[in-house]
Image: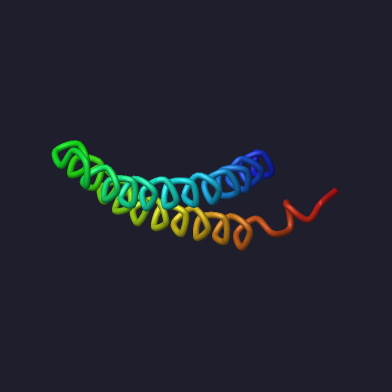
Amino acid sequence: MVTIYNRILTEEVRDHALYARILVATGLGLVVFGFVVAQYYFPLGLLLIIVGILRTINSVYDFQRGDSLKKKMRLVKREFAEILLQP
C-alpha cells in the first residue's frame, strides 16, 4: 500500500512540474500576444493581457502545490523507508 502511494505521489509531482511550466509559458505568451493585439483592437488586447496575468498568478499557486507534494513524498519516505527499500 505504501509503495503504491509513493508511486502515485512520484508520478503526480513529475506531471505537475510539466503542467506548471506550460502554465507559465502560456500565461506570459497571452500577455505578449495581448500587447500585440491591443495595437489593433484595444478591448480584446486588454482581455488577453488580463487572462495572461491571471494564468501566471495561478502558476504561483501550482508551484506551491508542487512543493507540498514534495514534502509529502519526503514524509512518506522517512516514515516508511524500510518498506520502500524492500524489493
